[in-house]
Length: 292
Ligand SMILES: C[S@@+](CC[C@H](N)C(=O)[O-])C[C@H]1O[C@@H](n2cnc3c(N)ncnc32)[C@H](O)[C@@H]1O
Image 1 (spheres, helix red, strand yellow):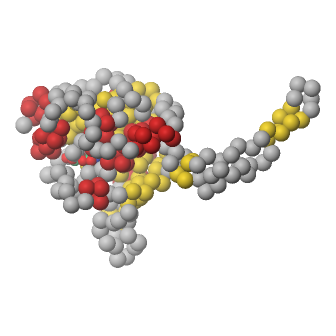
Image 2: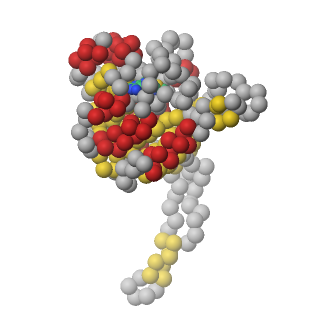
Image 3: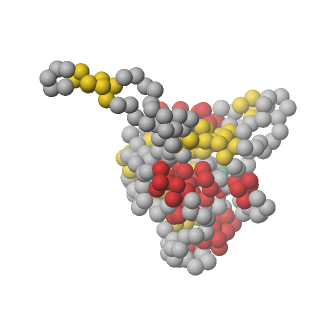
């Protein structure tokens, strides 16, 4: 578990201050299942990804195979490895498609995962105004694990309402060797407590302000960063099989993890390559070259 001080130090590293010259990001341009098939069993510690959502975006009409992706992710994950599957449900004929619900059931009943938690990523704005229901402002983060998670570094940045006050839980008694009873002093509440599992924050568009985004559906940097911090350790390998602009890989690298980014669209692969190549060496540019 990392301390609050360490977390705040990590969280306060401004983007772009990484001085590493050789990136730890392995970019593979191609279909997620085909690329996953090339990876050894038990070789990855964490997956943070947002796959194409139902029919919300077609990404040039490319197909993806949910069931085999789920099975391959389970195979490549090390025991205790975790998948953070960030998804939203589409609406079809005015009704929820239930795609995410069916995926969750498949993960558990067919692919072997535990459903460790269902977190909510709540956005501070909405993409499409609604008229027949309240505005839709959240996505699910299914936290799936291969057995019990091997790492959990809870982020403790939620201001504690009772900070500095003596805990209000019941009396904590104990029995001395001579049989008499004693009472342990109650703890003073810390300044910060562990987060809840509903995380609210900016969308990527809000994070970037006026900058033009290289991809239409980028994950907010804070969300990728905080999921990586929570469910992996430095030196671990983090994968995103639907990498888009490689948000997961870039955040993983900043946090001292190795990353594998798989993306089918050669245009996105090329822009990742361009964005990352300034003064670095990409581990597997050959994958990109072969795909273009
Ligand atoms: C929701 S976007 C991911 C965005 C990413 N999280 C980011 O921050 O940029 C989903 C991505 O999956 C890619 N994709 C679609 N089908 C794929 C497949 N079969 N294999 C690999 N990538 C695929 C799309 O091209 C798209 O870039």
